[in-house]
Length: 105
Image 1 (tube, rainbow, N blue to C red):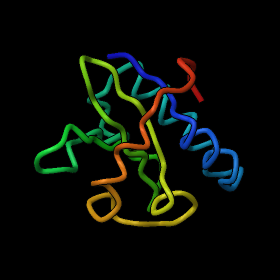
Image 2: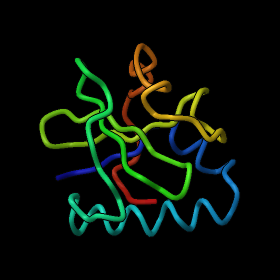
Image 3: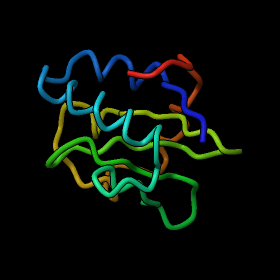
């Protein structure tokens, strides 16, 4: 599976506490090696849209739009810097997935 980071993700990632950024980097490398890694808990979080989510740490998840084998990670105004349930945070805001870096965290 491929991965890319949206502008929203990168902007929000920069504002996260250092400890959460460290957890996000570790989670990303686990996910990259094995999306089914039990610590990442990569799973579908939207009933009709191809939105999945990966666990970053306790209370933190990164949503991503899965299309054609590529996950475009994003954090939006609802999930950026806030501890929220991803089922509440995804939906119409998926339009924020407009590309971004093809590198890891």
